[in-house]
Image (cartoon, rainbow, N blue to C red; front, top):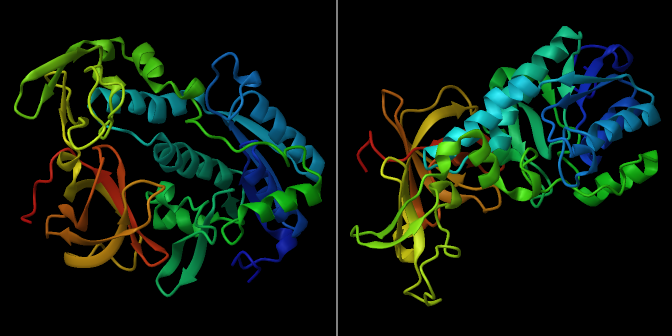
Length: 377
């Protein structure tokens, strides 16, 4: 077995590297080439807003494609650009817009990994005769008794395991993550060592297809009905004000409600629920945001065996930046899954992901549903 766990000599092992044009994927490609693997760089063109070449802080368009090509030239590997715009529009952008219409808070990066990158690109890598697909994600892969396991990155501040919970066992068997054991400064140092033209390039910050972070403008352009006005009400249904589209609100939001000068303390109002059917934004005190029970849909299990029925102790992340919180995973014989949190969490919205962990290992995860129904508490 070579260091990638593939039963071939390194020089005969072909690795496709997904190159976004950023420093992480560029270093991943350079490390694979330095190790002696036959490396092919692939960049996906996912969208084009016209001004993408000049835009900073994004990926997968314009300047980023140019940067990926320059990196490939620098390290001496072939590089291909694949037009996935229509697939990305269908699987990620349209779903993003529809999710906001449903009063949810989507995570398009998970959808992109789940569909375009780890389905479509992975299939392309196989068509190219590759033995593995490598990415610049900060996450680790380790061989276990039951097959490959997905682990949190060594650098907790860079860990991206939350965004990869939907990875299947079959995909994980084919994927490799060269940066999972590194901290970000080490990656930058490698970029300098290789003389990569992106060594000082800033990390991407916004959702790649949302210019300047203005997601409401994107949703309104794709779904004009999202701008329909409605009422802002309290939990008893009393009308407190009006709004110009529920897409302008998220669960847990306090500022920008347009209700006049509210106090900062216990009487401050937060968005506690969105009702797309009535176009109502429901507000209440912060205590109303606390949730200790979540129903999940489309659960993906990558722990050992099958998703166990009954009661399983684990920890969960409800957003990428939070520390894992103690919880219990409840699954019945019909596959209905509920998570019961040891302590309430605040500002959790339907459409977000709940990811399960056993220590550093990712056990899987699912999408948070609007109502926690199906299993008794």
